[in-house]
Length: 240
Image (cartoon, rainbow, N blue to C red):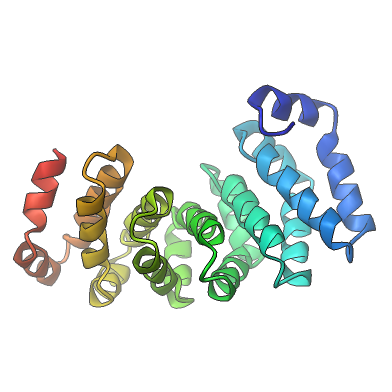
């Protein structure tokens, strides 16, 4: 029911979120209730207005507790990453709160445990992309290995459209920071971005996010030389 936009608003107006959170608190050790609840919250969090309401009621705390309680439950972890992705979308205050509560660490732990699960990888990267819009978060995320995890996923799933899109967006955000530009280049981020551009020449978002990421890393003089040596200019011109 919560997949439909109208239903998402209707359910929130009838306080469905309150009942979901009550169930999560009452049945903390019940795997299916926790998993289904995270699934419901991830769908409710798609709506911008719902994000604020959910965060004000501590939805992020309930999700993070579930993540910690059932670290090997793939479905729950997938729903949780998707919920955190939704809560962090286009909301500066939520991004700061989620980082303060350790959401980034949990997301990275999930990525490392479920490298073979493309849905988890995709939504985890989407969540990292949203968290990385904040300048302080960019530094913290890189220090915890977010760049490495994103690049590993890009290599593992080179033809997965959404994952590549989120990954290019995440690298674009992370590369705003001067130190991150150098670190990402040293880890071969430019190569993965160029591969994505070549693999998806007609995908507007991938092309746009890739150009944004390349723009950010190209601020550095040494990076400029390296990028030109790899015919980066050709790929940018093709995108135009």
